[in-house]
Image (cartoon, helix red, strand yellow):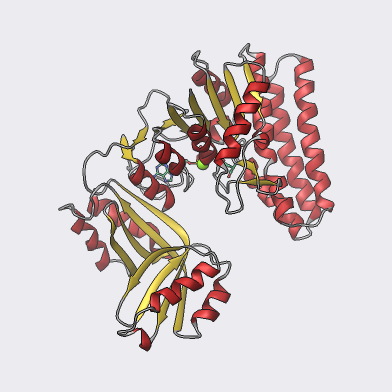
Length: 435
Ligand code: ADP
Ligand code: ASP
Ligand code: MG
């Protein structure tokens, strides 16, 4: 069994929906995970923000615009008038529900209910389309099996049991379609796996069904060696190890949700990145094999806060770092980079929601400096720390102020912290120095 995930662009137009149908109808039994049609989740997030800001008219207008787009798709995708009507009724019901939410009080639960609607619509429409085309496809509701626990980790035991039950209960099918991104939380509320989370859904499912392979189909021919949105002439990397891919995903390569690699690595299931627009191109194969040493790719993660903690008492005293770490632990804030000197330690976090309380506690025994608007630039590749060409990356230091460097934490990663304003320059310079 294979698990194939198609992202927003892949299901975002009639042309691409037809391409997806061609790709998945090869006669093999499979589970297909879909995102919302491209743009939908962004509109839903905006809708939720408008409700929060009390801008009900703006919120309703945005729904009318989105609704009009869905009407066009339904009109073009479905032939028989009864089927058109059936799908229209479903979509009408979703939009009526969304509009009814404008009178509710905004909170996280409301946000989660709103953003879940995109995947519910795309999977419903796509399953109906496949059925129209004579494909034996069934919809498996993700909210019937996908669940996270109290620490927001996938509840594998629950997922495995319930997915199996739902498959057993469904009529036999060649293709099972399900929603990416959405899930239930530990208390049964609608939740999600964070933006871009459909990739993660695919590997979570892949691991519980012990799939032969997970395929992530998107709008580019695999993981590129640098961020194609900011750097020209990047190219796809054919093979990456789980570790290399995990570093890149975690440190900002948007093609993969940060957690995607974890379930696949644990279950040793290869992950293939493929281009829906160009199915023949090789893409990227992520597996346990490592190929070649040295820097393979560069990625960048924005929204980082750097914290410098200085204390004269740190000098020759033990237990200082423990005290520091305990504060971060207390506020459930994870640390990405860390560097130390005799009198200070600098570290970075990407979740600044508890920053004020953290700083307050740190200031009880140290002086604290905070820099926001930072970006981690990550270089990943097997054994890059030892590789002879790696020194070239340090040339970037003479052109760009680098706030922190993390070298040697693992053999597969070197990270630099720069001002977000310098990110694009850093990516471009590194590209020309390193590759
Ligand atoms: P999907 O909607 O299919 O999930 P995403 O937009 O989430 O697609 O991810 C694909 C996009 O990721 C590409 O179009 C590309 O612009 C961006 N991207 C950023 N970094 C990389 C990278 N290193 N390699 C490939 N794509 C990348
Ligand atoms: N639709 C969700 C998002 O836009 C999940 C995904 O596309 O992976 O974030
Ligand atoms: Mg994505």
